[in-house]
Image (tube, rainbow, N blue to C red; front, side, top):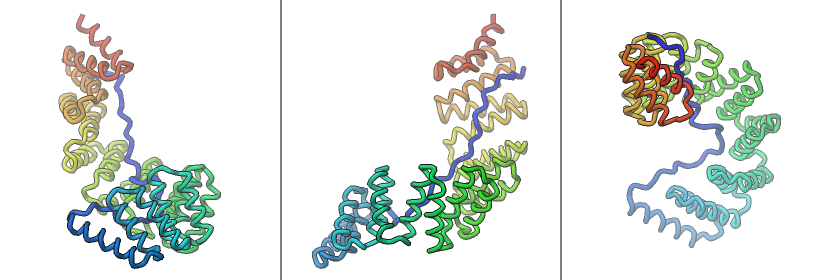
Length: 341
C-alpha cells in the first residue's frame, strides 16, 4: 500500500564553503615540532629587540601568535606594528581580516576605513569593504569597491564571483551566470566557483550544472559537496540509478553520512516503489543519526506499504517522540492504529 502523505526531506545542495571572499591571509597551521616552535619564538623576540622600530618584526610575532590560536595577541602586535609605522599596509589588512573572523564587525570596519584612507588601491581592504556593502545590501557601493579592486588586478576571481552573487540577489541572472563563469575562467582551480555555478544552473534546471559539479569533483575528488550536489541534480532530473551510485560514493568518502543513506531510501520509496530497499536505507540513516525523525517516519511508510503495520506504528511513534509536532507522523500513526483495530 503506497501512501500519499510522505514527508520529503528538502534536497538542498551544499552551499559554498565560503559566503564571500576577502582578504588573503597566511597559512594558520599548528606547529608539529615544539622545539621548532620555541626556536621560532626566540628568533622573533630577537628580531624585535634588534629592530624595535621595524613593523615587520611585530607583524612576524602577530603571525606567530595567530598561527598558535592567539588572535587577540596577534591584533595587539599588529597595533604595535602600526605604532612603528602607520603606513604598514599588511597590518591594517590582517587586523581587519582577523576582526572579521572574530565577528567584531565595527572595529573591523574602522580598520578597513583607515586602510583605504591610507591605501586607496589596497586590494585586500577593497574586497573586504565590498563584502560589508553586500551584507548591508548596498550593492552599488559594493560594485564600486569591486571595480576599484579589479582596476588594480583584473585577475581577481573572487571579485567576479562576488559580482555574480550581487547579480543573482538582484535577479540579473544572465549577468550572474556570466560573472560566475568569468571567475572560474580566471582561476580554473576555483573549487567554490564551480560549486556556485553548479548550484546556480541547477536552480535554472540547466543541464550544464552537471559539467560544473564534475569539474569541482576533478579538483577535489574526495570532497563530499560536489558529489552530493550532483546526486541531488540527477535525482531531480529523474536519473535515479546514477544518483544512487553517487550516494554510494559519498558513503565511501564519509561512512557516517546519514543524508546519503536517507536519500537512497527516499528514491527507493518515492520513485522506485522498492519498499524493502527503502526501509533498509532509512534504517541505515537512523543508524548514523539516531534522532533522524524524518527517517523514522519514512521507514514507517515503507513498512506500512509492505503490510507491516505494527512495525510502522513503532516508527511513527518514535518520530513523534523525537518531534512531537510532526503532523505527518501523527496522521500516519492514527491511520496505522485504525488499521490495527
